[in-house]
Length: 600
Image (cartoon, rainbow, N blue to C red):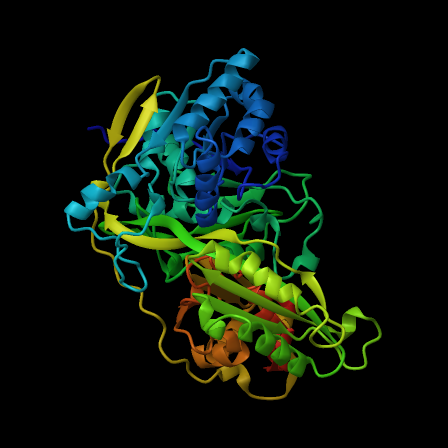
């Protein structure tokens, strides 16, 4: 059994690791742009969100040869020759559910182009074939939040999150292109950095630094101004460049981009990405636990932000597993309600619709009704007079939510409220999947690295003690909260970034000055958040302070139900949650507003 040990102990310059993809469907030209835009040592890309694994599983059901991100193969056809010529190595998790299939497809492209790169692939993450073995060992894949055992659910995918040492092993054995399955997003930077600098398994501070750098660039252009709260400050955002992490031997890094490309790298854009899809400050990866409450950010010149001070701890003795299984069938209808008596019209629709099914609303396994009051008083346009009623039904029986449902909605067309018209009358049911996060002992998950047909097993990193990161307690009154104030949207002074974490959502809020953070930390308690976002009122909300980033992170448990694919929210990935909060009004002291504007 082989353990990757890096590329020796010699001191090397910082390694330049570029990203060219943040999700399956990202800009196809990004690989070409990163290779042509300036010097890089590694071209990496992230294709795998939790939802993507379910999409790939459905693709594979239709085509056994599918299961990987085909757009990566297209990108390799565009840049492979130049990468080989310039010594640029490629590391990608585009292998998805079929790393071998993806590697073979890339190999076919290389052969067609007359090239002969060494192509490696990393497996071991797919646990579907081992579920019985795990069950016999007493590992029942309990849900990480609810504690419920997985039971006999019909699993479509079950993939452990692997770390970066399989990538190290592949590079050590001469790979030019490394294709992986489900590794952590940060592993795409951890592996190249550890190999380049020859880090050891217990170089936890250095590894943690590379995890942080990997987290910043994993989502592509989000690090260069994409989806940024203060987007109007970012130049060239119509076509932002993708990010580069320059990782030094001591684990510090600089986030930057190629000159001349759109977007910007600032302390703000990096802060925003650091707050994206995280939970408590102890950010767990299979190779190391990175303490996000130790990160220090500093401007290092135009489009350059230095990351330092990151403390690393050993990883835990468990590894996260992403499980997807078939959840059933769903249909959604959208009806517009126009003019007066909006709520009465919505109530009439519900009464008529549910009464048409045996047992009423209980006829379905699950229902969700949302009335979006987008209408305005004294509207000047037809659209300004309209509200939107969304009705979703779910059931294990496709027939109940298919024609049986859509037909009853259609029957309302001439027999309900005045002005009825549909923005999306459903005509059939669609299948949905359920995401199930679980844990398995890390000791049972090995990475299988295949280079030139030879397989090597790479052991997981040994676990060790990790300091607990407790949620912050009750907030003290804001010392900066006295004096005259203005009632303005929170977003005038504060940025926010939000996203999905399985069935939970995370919402990070950051301040732009020490004074404004002092006020924010005292003002934005869990209770206040629930008042500002009533949708969260009945849910568990965990609050964590990251004073080093002038930020607060909230985890809203269960907001997305059974995960993105099963969520009935209009925004099933919670991407807009932060912007909703920023639109809420608060009485903000004038000194806080002034310091936020100046950033001092």
